[in-house]
Image (tube, rainbow, N blue to C red; front, side, top):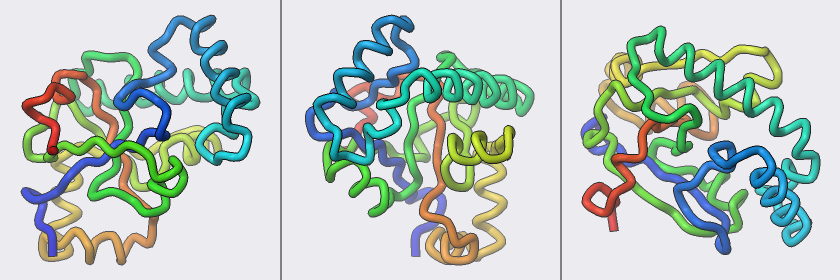
Length: 182
């Protein structure tokens, strides 16, 4: 049984990529060139199939990030970046496989200030693509949800029946060495 104070955030990265980066933070021309290179050199991987049609992916992701950013501001967040770094709470075997069992970067959720992080139940991009909106949650919302399940994260995950809870980290200050779990 994991309580809120014990929860870990995990970011996945394909084995030959640089961890804790977001392609959307690059200038558009560089982002397109990098996506093309990844899609071409990794045609067999699920992590890069979305880059094969980067024109559509880029437009969708740009709109999604703008939506998340504005919703996070409305909820009282203070994002320092326009495009967040994506993590999941407690990791996901599904995503670990999806990213070729590559590099994992870990942070303690308790080390993150609530004004720097938001959450979605499941994949924010899939929900945005399907519904045109995303239910964004704050750290307080996640705590309240966990309390309904006796502060037991595993019970909560079983009840919601999703692969993971995505976390959007809106600053890079926590990816410094002193925060990363080794």
